[in-house]
Length: 453
Ligand code: UD1
Ligand code: MG
Image 1 (cartoon, rainbow, N blue to C red):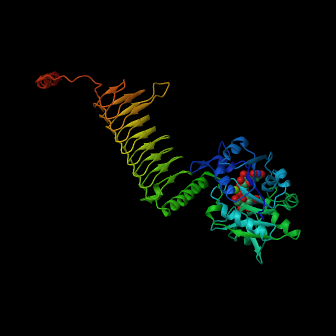
Image 2 (cartoon, rainbow, N blue to C red):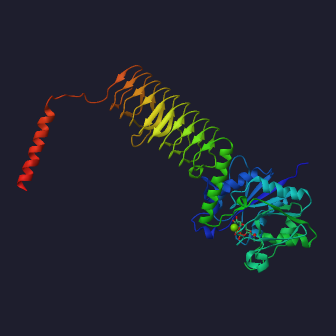
Image 3 (cartoon, rainbow, N blue to C red):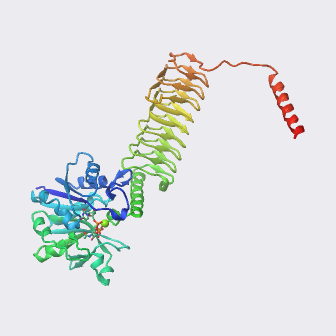
């Protein structure tokens, strides 16, 4: 029989150490608020319900936690009186009666469902409280797990620990699982007679044992349990997230020449056999298909690059850029809300915005789609197999028919039919011998100035 489970996410803290105008759980890791990463992990641990305990920036935190189809109830912890007090803010949810309760923190964004599931398994195996611990070389600041004969006997907060207890390097991640039928009784016994005068959730260990309950601990990878209290830890968590995701991608068949210089977003999707050169940044919403090449120093966001397409170096793909198979967007080109047809080439110093470029088109260097009139955006349609001469301005709304030519340096303000040649520039004049006359005159002026000096 399936065990029912309530997950309680604590995110009410004041984030004092973050020194920020917003709650720390709203700060982004891989371009997504920390709290959303946590909700994702919780959703994968087969919970029936999710309760989010909010305090500071309650509305924003609740909004940022809404990811996917996970249904979340929020509970307000009005006063921040400690982690034990915070869990009881969700008292009404707990009182509905679940087999399992898991408690997790909104500021531990690298957690995955693995440790949460392991803790639930501990409950299924007969424990009343299962604490998720981790081993670390730097235990300072964390509660320490004190173990005897395979059972967890206490969690000692740093402030209350003896020197011997401080030497312990098995630490409390803060995450735990509690027998849902006994949770309310156990939680209501937590007091605040300690160094901080707070209700410590960690007291649950000794409380459960004092009433004859069984308490155990499971171990989790240190990286997953890293908590975020300040900006330095935020940067470290970002680094750890990036390393973990890049490794997953490379293992799945993506080539990265200098992975430590590639930055991914939480939802970046890169298919097997894509090649990512150094110093590439992926904003949210990027999808790169098999065999595509992203040359160095490109920035890609909200864009799709099809199989075999080539991007960069120094290209910028903005939201709505969609490159078809075998197309090319080269150096110093920007594409925004624009489709580049199969095999089309946009190779040098070009801006394609609010435009459709047909298959096989060749867009010359320095071409600009003039999509904005200062108020509204307009569309440019460029047909298949067209040839747009270098340094042309295509003033939208405008369309260029299939197989048409646009002469270099044209300013195109009217539609060009298929197969036509459009010249939108002044006709060239030739004045034989005129250059030497001009040069002689300039040299004479210079000589006169020198004589008068
Ligand atoms: C807590 C644990 C410590 C553990 C560490 C892991 C306690 C007493 N201590 O310490 O054993 O090693 O986490 O990171 O539990 N929160 C609320 N309301 C409150 C207080 C906290 O919602 O009144 C939330 C915070 O937003 C945060 C989490 O609970 O997400 C932990 O709070 P924090 O103040 O960071 O606890 P630590 O001192 O780090
Ligand atoms: Mg903390």
